[in-house]
Length: 103
Image (cartoon, rainbow, N blue to C red):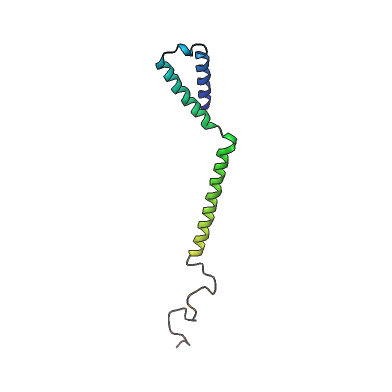
């Protein structure tokens, strides 16, 4: 598309070089519209001063931060991962039965 837009603009420039003032209003409006489309396409392909690259880098960094944060939350809330001494059950009864020697 980029190459076609450049060729179209060059062709329009060559064809209207000396005759642009002689174009009827209808043709001029159509030419103006088509040139605008080509210019918009060309501008969309340029990364002015690396702005798009910087924006993409910031988005990627934020995405990684959120992913790391989510992984940290998943580990903190996972019921199977419990460090020693962090249980609510402080007695030695881990089986739900009575404390003391087995009978």
